[in-house]
Length: 326
Image (cartoon, rainbow, N blue to C red):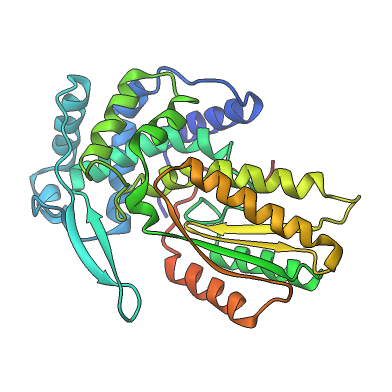
């Protein structure tokens, strides 16, 4: 398997370590690395390895390689350096979700996938350093079965009061202004922020396209404060080695499990209230509450398993180091 080039890999590692060491540091000078031929070449390799149909322009990988990949990448680099790059509209494709529902994918054309991939290569190590342990969806070196195991372990330890919330049309309701503010809290690079704004506008006035290369990273960033709140709730109610609350989030599905003893009913109620308060701050995400019972209905575990197994997609490796070693 072809690995990420050493220079790029080492740069990403250094960015991650800096971000992990200094939680308020704002990174500058990223745009020049986004535009490097090495970064674009790696973004193209990853896009090709993921496959996928062409975007609205109809151009395929075969057509690009017939004309010359290096020329394609150089032209793209020139557009980025001259700041004349403009992403094209995403091609909309409807796919069945449930018996009576559909999911709308926004498929970027290949040139836009490469640019999104290059931007992701620079932004991912920053925000991965900030993401929480209970977040599993579409993250490097994290798998769906790990989220299921986390829930199963909580059940075995008697955390059987369940709050299961999904976010209706979550990807479609992400507010661009809020998202850009969250990015700007860690990125002090106007050109990167402008490029990201162009990418977001290509999908409409709000939301991130399901099908975009950078969308999973941005979606996890959008919900990171929810994860932080749950981590705090877990820690402040800890008694030595034993915790009375656990949670797992996979994209837009959140499961919170609270100690089953009746004296911890207040914690379940408080976690439910605080979760909705955090979601309300996102102002546009509608929530659907599935269960909040004193005992764990078996359907909830199977629902969570089906949901995250169905959502699980390809996740690229993040260099040569394991970010679970924190």
